[in-house]
Image 1 (cartoon, helix red, strand yellow):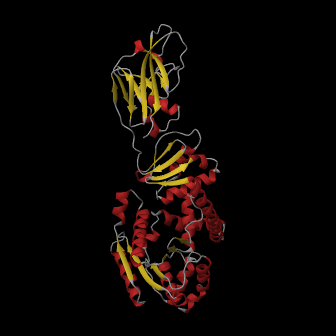
Image 2: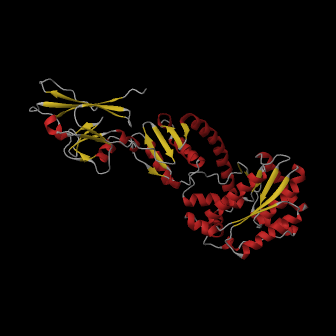
Image 3: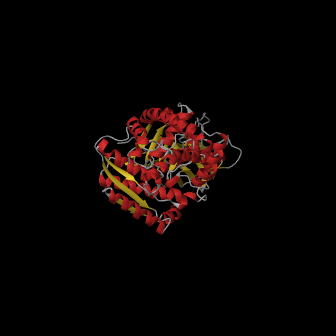
Length: 463
């Protein structure tokens, strides 16, 4: 294997610069059987003495190519035996999983593969798992993100190191690897699906990149250099983002709580990065549409509604907080019937409603959102108290006609989660007061009013 010495110094430089491997570590190697992973296996085997490594080989068979997939698994297992290394194999049905989860075949295979990798890492208590991604894979990944419209998340491409996953070959080109394997006479398997242009990544590899190289023969080198710059900037930004999240975000039993008083003054670029970091941490497979909806929700004067996020999660605004939550917050449900003036405590809201019958003595009355005076002759007992329901309408005081309660809440920017906290007072199926906000125009007192019915809400004292 002496000819691997042509790239070993560069790989050691990558390992040392990015702190990928420490001496004495237990390293698993993901080996598919293709040229890149086979080269990685032999290179790390060659370096195992230098770093005093304990090695193991991991292979995941997706069940996509039938007998060909099984042959790849047998080939990897046989090579692993020759090197006298532990072998861990997993089997899956990526096509069925993709249909069930409504994923692309590529995304489904990746999800199953990494789930298995993490399982083996946990079971073996290995320190790292090495992946055989090359410089060409990095270039294809960056182009994929650009074309798909996800470049705003990260133009740096695949990280050289992410948690326990490392990529020692990320600066080595595939052609160089193939050349060295052929010179050494080391066999590898050829995956026929790598040439199937029905797969998006293969169209990038076989159609787009050759075309771009005609415009700039150094396109690959330039893009790889740019990815390094982006990754360095990402590392710097990550520190700032972590510090900012620690100040403005709290973990809740159901998700994340963002303090908008702290969040809103941040630069839009930082706001976007914070949300991206939080969604990744959960994790949720979000898109730009989800991100833009959350940013709109967080903005001053933005909508007050629930927005749907992947996996059944929700985003909503309540008070000066933005929530990313796995479930709808509990909504108060209550019903009271009042037969005569008096006082009733609405325990579900920690408020009390006081009702008094007063004679109109010609004195000036002071109408407020929390204390209203209505014409007693225009209402009748019993009064009902209940929360808002879809379809409810009333005539807002000072308005020109009827309005849906929902639209009334929206106009006042009342968050969805807060709406049932404003009890409706109802007389003969007619909403006479949205308590704390507005009485109904039709029952306001006039010059001929003989008796007032005063309605007043106030907070109850908690014991």
